[in-house]
Length: 93
Image (cartoon, rainbow, N blue to C red):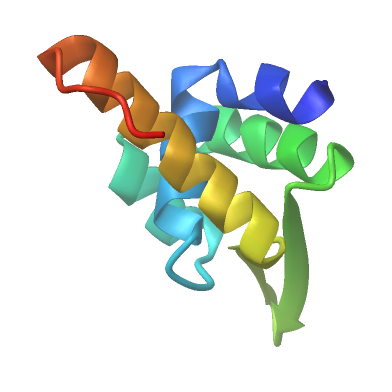
């Protein structure tokens, strides 16, 4: 599944983690994930192509957001599952 491949890359996962709470422009996302602007733009383009983010224009700025509740929940679940793996916390049923 393309969505899971997109989440396998750490910068894209961090971008989606930030975007799950609302809209952000490239400048804000660059600061939030600590990556270079060209790299963030490339990752956002891939996420957009995969259908995981959507955009909206606000004047000259382009705002990105996670595309729908399923994507937000998917990102949350992926990170919670990773946390359980790292911490050894018991799995949920």
